[in-house]
Each structure stands twice: as structure tokens, then as C-alpha cells.
Image 1 (cartoon, rainbow, N blue to C red):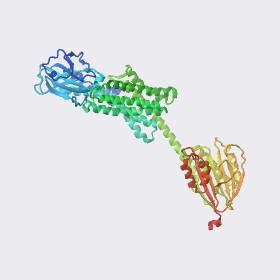
Image 2: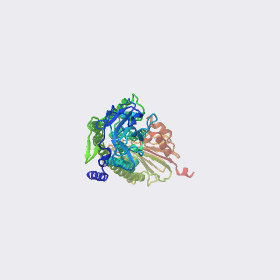
Image 3: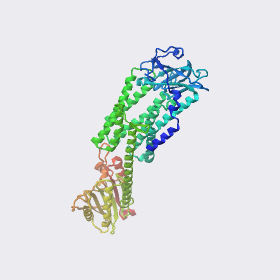
Image 4: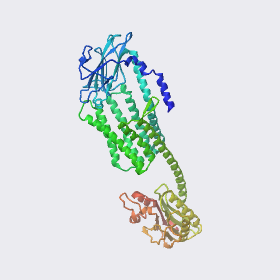
Length: 635
């Protein structure tokens, strides 16, 4: 920071300082007289202005709000001897914040800045005005009468800022050099405070480019805030230094300034409420209302071309609304810091902006000086806040991204295991026509199914549902199916398989349990069923009554029993998980058993899609088979 300050001081040293160049221009000012009102005769050198008020220390009180806004200033200026070449006149500070200015020398119009009412073009007050004088207007070595006609816009009269003016007549190149030197010095003095704002603006743009749509809401709003507020601070710094006056009328600048100002307010409240997780809509709406009143009041009073009784109170209301906005934001910071206790570091640093504003409003401005360069406390606070919050949110985003990448890798591995153990393509088994549909509710589901051919020509069918959803449920499901593949080689009955699975789950229990239905279909159509807390299957659309034991993994011993059903040629069985019957509409209505029974004869895909369309809440598994003996297949 110190090296930067020395760098700018070195640049400033390359430009001759204004006091040296302007010593012959704006120094040794004569008596300055002023009078309110408007009269063309006041431009004449012969006019007696002895009754006019005299400026004290070159300071003139600006016209009052309900006046017509006109002010005349007169001063007799010594024209240096020995001047050769074109002469010019230079004025400084004759205007208030916005208005119109016309300059006369010895009664001859020298130039005009802006356009007077009734069809006025109000201009921002310039740093200096320089006009060329026509030949013979002023003679070297004589006294010249400089008369300035000024009209102050209503907003300038509301603020009632004083006028500090100075005048000079000299060679035109000297005056132009003095004006350029003044402009360069002002720019260099304004540049150091602008640079931090510009860097934060670039930081905000970089955040949007780097993180893009993947950014969290907090980081995205922070990036937008880093773009919006620096734009306002830069514009305000340039306007305060009177560096934008040559490029825009007062009306154009007022509209542009408001356009720049609005986004910084618009983003602040959502940013606070998002970062701190507030749900209260009343104070958020109040925060928005306060800045809207401020912006509207500021715009209306700036654009007013004629005094109106509503302007002064509206101007006062606007600035009090800005104070209230800062109070609300500070209250939100303190609430997050001491009550909600969420993102407390962010809350603490954010409060700096509002505290510095309120101190300034109370007449206790804080300014940081680095050499001759002044940094206002609000700018310093904003830099601290912007850097701190950005660092925290970026660190959080990177950490979240790494966690997300790790989770995606885990999910990808689990899905790969699941694709192998929950087959999308079922095996070809004589006498059985099989179809299956599987729709997980999360990225990875907890439902499973398996069809395993047996050595005696029968088929083993297992359908189950692990409690919970997601990765944990999927991993438990893969554990069950892995064990099932081993047990299927031992030619066990359905009850024995469930008993062995239960023992393994109890031994390795992590709090999950599994509902499971196990069926064996013999070549002659004998169906043997054992159930551990799962939904019974449907035969030709009718639910098969089964006794059910506890789900697997709850107790060491379960009282499972077997049921035997004889299938006939063409019989259809439908196995499903509770994700079908527990599908729920937006109104809270369940899909239910009646709807399930009504579509139980449809294909597995149709049943699953119907439940999903109704309102999926859990993993959906449907497996259907049709028993078709060899003679039916030959037919």
C-alpha cells in the first residue's frame, strides 16, 4: 500500500502543482461583490455595485430555495502587463453543484456554460471555466470588470452549499495549462481511492466468470454486490471531484447516477437475507422500501427545474430513508451476530459499512490518510468487507465443490455396483416372461430386485426395499444382494434364505433394516413365497395373502413362514415396492392399494410410470412375470 502511495505521489510530482501554475491566475483575488436577482444592466462596467454585498474570504451564500435562483457576481481584475497573444478569462467555483453560468468581461459576453431557463440545460459545476476573449476586450496593465451571471438549479438551492469563487485574466495558453494541471491533479488525487473499488469490481466479474452457474446463491449475490457497489463508489468519487462535468448535463448525470445506484441497493437486502438465512419478509420489504424512497426522492429533486414546496421535505425524507436503510441493515448484521449466530464473521465485517455511514451521518467522519491521499472510512470498510466475505465464500465454495466431487465419485461407484446387482436386463428363463422397472427417488436408490436361475430349473426371485434413500440405502442393498448371490448357490428354500440374510444384516447392522420378499418358482408352476415385511405380490391383479415376519436386520430371530401357490398357464405375478402405493399427489392423496390393484396386470414400465406421474416420494420397483409352460410357448 505504501509503495502504491509513493508511486502516485511520484506521478503527481511530474505535473506542476496547481498553486505554482495558477499563482498568477487565481491568486491575489480582489474584492468580490454579489447580488441576487437578474438584470442585464449588471454586466456593464459603469454600473455602480457599491451597494452590493461583499464576499468574505471569497465565499458567497448560494441562492435560497424559493428564490428565482439567479445570482450576479462582479469583481475588478488586474490584467497583467506585457501580455501578448490571445487573452482569456478563467472562473472557478462560481456555480453551486448544478446550474448555468455566463461570463462577461467589460460588458462583453465571453462565454456561457449551459442554457438558462425557461428552456434550460443545467450543467454539473465544472472545476474551472476558461473562455477566450475577443481582441480589445481587455488591455494588459489595466483593470477589467468580470461579471458572472449564475443560475442555480433547485436541487443546488436545497443543499444550500456556499459558493467559493475566483477569477483571472491572462494569456489563453497559460489559463488552459492551469486548467489541465488542475484536472490532472484532481484525477491523481481521486485515483488512489478509486483503485480499490475498481479491483473489487474486477473481482466480482471474475467470480461470475469462474464459478458461473455453479456458484452458490451467497457467492453469486456477493459477486453482483462487488460489481454494483464499486460502480457507485467510482461514480460518486468522480462526481465529487467534478471530473464528469464536461461530459454530461445535470439531468443526464442524475439519471445515470441513479441507474448506477439502484443495483447496489437492490442486491444488498437479498444478499443479507440469503447469507444469514433470514425468513422474515417484513423487514426485507421495509429495507427495499427505504432505498426506493431514497432513490425516488433523490431523482425527483435532482430533476426539478422549478422550486416546489414538496422538494425540500422530499429531499430530507430521502436522506432519512437512506439512514433508516443503514439502520435496518445494521440490525440484520447484529441479529445474525448475536441472536441467530450464523455466519458471525460475515455479519461482523458487514456491520462496518453501516457503522461508518452512521458515524458520518452523526458528524463523526473517519478518514484514513496515506501520505496526502485520503481514503474515506466507508471506502475502507467496503474494501475490508468485500475482500473478507469473498475469501470466506470462495473458500466455502471450493470446499463444497471438492466435497461434491467426492460425493459424485462415490455415487458413480455405487451406481455402477447397483447396475450390476440390479440388472436392467433380466435373464432368459424357460416358462417365464419377465419385465422390470426401477426408478430411484434419489441419485442412488435403496430398492433392489434379482432373478436367479437355479440348478433344478426353478427360478429364485427376490424383491426388497432398504430403509432410507440415497447412498447409504444403496450400499446396504448391495450388501444384501451380494449375500444373496452366495446363498443362491446353496439351493436353499425362501425361508432359509431370508433367515440367513437376516443373520448377516443383524451382525453388520448400522441401523438400517430391509423388507424382503423371496419367491421360488418351480418348472411345474409351484410358487413358494416367504415374506419379511414386504408388500405381497399380485396374482392376476389380486393380492396374494401372505404371512409376514419382521423386516431383516431388526431382530436376531424371525418367525418367517412359507406360502405355496400353484400357478396356471398364463398367470401373471406382479412384485413391487411401497414406492408405488405410497406415491403422493400434490394435494396429499396417496396412490394407494386400490389404484395399484387396478393396474397390476399392466407391464412393469406402465405401473412404475403411473406411480411416478402421480407423485413419486420413494424408490419405485416393479417386476412382472407371466408363467408360460412349454406347451403354451410351443402353441
